[in-house]
Length: 295
Ligand code: ADP
Ligand code: ZN
Image 1 (cartoon, rainbow, N blue to C red):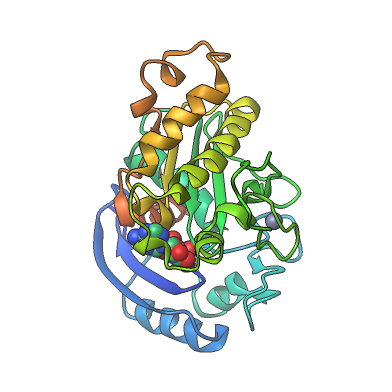
Image 2: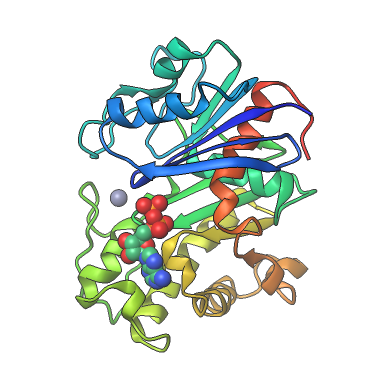
């Protein structure tokens, strides 16, 4: 067994952990995300005496995950103050001389769920987070999808729900999926905290409608074998049956597979790793950095 470092770099908080390639987490720490300098100093301080052999980073984005690019390992155009164009991987490399793997938080989580969680044994899966923003990571034919940069599935344009008066809050696109269905959009639409809306509120029907429309596009384009939905908003467990039902209604049995017909309850699921999906994802990335066979 190897000793691995894992970093879940979130826009609100960072989680650092030491673990092993079987997914065991030995020790972890969490602190709020402040400036890059102060935050990365805490990260470095945590790992300094840990004798780790590799580091995996799953980061909020957008990021540059392309190893050939001069800005590989950077956070790129984030609106988050101080973090735009920040060389996160470079800072780690200046301090630690070991293999590292850097990817988006959702790509990491998809890899973690495929290695140890809900998508174990599969080759194609999707991990979606619905929180402050909406993002998704996809694995196709056993490999994390990268491209020009990485997919940005949170910004799809969708047909509007007929009872939705809200204009949408995405600074780039207004009423894209994230602008309509991320946590802050729900709160702007209804004027209350999303966690305080009753389980039978119209808010959740509208939310499920938008998420189901997005899932339909993802399924038609990527054909995932499992869809895992996490993030703060998905703590509203009543969303799962609403999303599954609306998804089936919209799909109208067009994809003739048991997963989207009778077995929908095991097709669209919560993360099996629970709140550990992110940090286990980073651990999976660290294992990948060492070239280990994980699982
Ligand atoms: P982040 O996106 O920063 O990683 P989260 O995934 O926890 O963090 O998302 C935070 C957002 O999720 C908040 O904007 C809030 O609107 C929403 N949220 C958090 N908890 C709940 C809850 N229990 N019910 C509904 N929405 C929630
Ligand atoms: Zn957008």
